Length: 90
Image 1 (cartoon, helix red, strand yellow):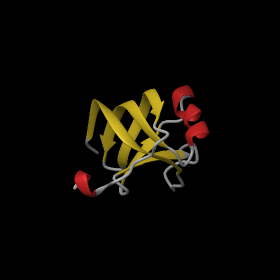
Image 2: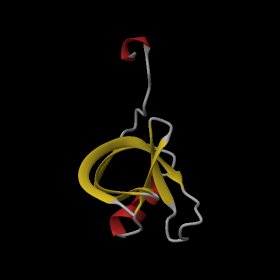
Image 3: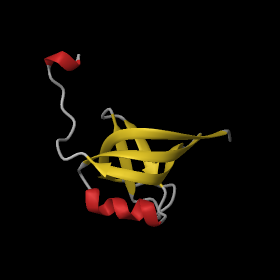
């Protein structure tokens, strides 16, 4: 199993996560409506419960494995405006 570890900033929506991997993973951040970053359940990760179904900008450490993208949360900013595309965004 290969693994790559790096620091990144991601922008996405906090969503519930269900998996056969392990019951401890309960949240994910969905980026671009498709790419899923599974949140590590440490104290910073559990604090994302208050942002469920909201848009955030998060500074994270990403561990990319064969099973997916796992993130440790470093810092979170709520984006109350949410993500929106307008004609100029394309």
